[in-house]
Structure formats: structure tokens, C-alpha cells
Image (tube, rainbow, N blue to C red):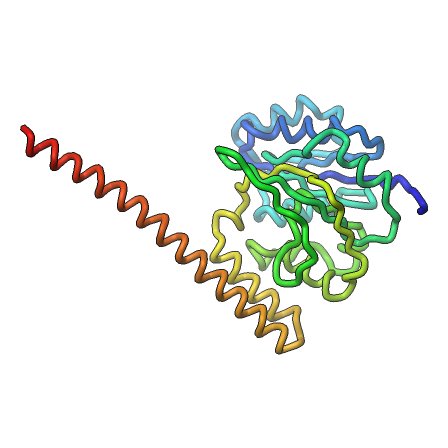
Length: 268
């Protein structure tokens, strides 16, 4: 196997992330892989985020703080300033699983992959779980924090489409998958830790609706598209049920407390 040492551009997008960005920065600049350039795109934070970025600016190739049109606009800026062969988007609040993970991946692969996907550890207030990368057409294979995009992806397919507020990265993924499935590599390791604070996680139903629109644009085979529309429809039903159960659970707790109040008042 031919070994090579590509330059990796790590892009961090931030906005008012004073509580979390320092951990993200340290997880990047602490990597043992020697060929990393670090880019930070801040959306015009008005807390102490910029102060923290300036603290590490000798370790950052390029950073900027200015108002943008959303996360994908900021990520597009990162693509513009990146000169690496591969680009990774590690948002503020997320971090690499350990200091050797990029070395472990890029010191042991060939050059001809368009996307390299690893597993993601999803953190919760209590505990967490691993999201295992999968080659699938109807959804993202993993979280973008654990994906490395070759620069040729954006040369061939363009940058993120800003008309998609929640699913622009899924749009890129799906188009690469449809045309170059064989040039996607799954690596068997956890790459990053995701805190699940992204827009798509906060708006899961709208995210699935965007996937329907994106797939309708990208998939020409009507049978496959119909199958995936059914999958998306079932996903929306599941999310609606979960949302209802969550509200019902809250209502049940309120009712339970109210009953306790009534019982207490009856005793007076």
C-alpha cells in the first residue's frame, strides 16, 4: 500500500461558544499528525469567544469573526480558505476522540478516496452512544465531525447549497454517493465526540422534510425515490410520536404534581 501524508484542513465554525470552543481548539492543536492547518470561522460572537480564539491565534492558520448567513455559509468560507487535501468540519463544542486519531487514519490509507467516514460518539448529559458509519443513500453515514472531504468533492459538486438550511451536507453526501460510491471509505474507529447541538438535531422533522426535497432533486430512479420517501415518511411519524410522548410525559408530571397539591389542600 502506498502511504502518503496529505495536508488536513480542520475548520471550526463558532457563534457565542465561549463555554465550549476552547476544548475544541485544544483537541485540534493537540493532534499528533504533523500536517494539519486550522481554520476558525466565527459568526460575529458577542461573548468571549473571540478572546479565546485570539489566545490561540499562533496555532491557527486563519480565523475571522463576522456575521454570516448561517452555518453552511460559514462552512463555505472555511472551504474557501482551506488549502489542505482533505477538509474536516469540527464545530465549536465538538472534539476529536483522542490526540492520535488523525494520525491513525491518514498514516494508513491510500490517496484515492473522496470521503473518509469514521464513527461518532454522541454525548448526552448522562452517558452516550456510538453512531457507527454506514454507506447509505437515504441519510448521512455519520456526523460531519467524523468525515474528511477531499477537496475534489467541492470542486466537482460545488460548496454547500444555502437554500438548504438543515440538509446541505446531506445534499453533498448523496450526490457523491450516487456517482462515486466506490470512492468512499469507512474507517473502523471513533473520530469525534458530538454534543448534538446542531440545527438538524434541534429540528429533526424539518430536517427529514429537507431530505425528501433533496432526494427528489438527486435521485432519478422513481422506484428508489419512492422507497426512500416511504422511509422518510416513517421517520417523520416516529418523530411526531416521540414528540407527542415527550409532551404527554411532561403533562403527566404536571398532573401528578397538581394531584399532590389537591391531596395536600384536602388535609388542611
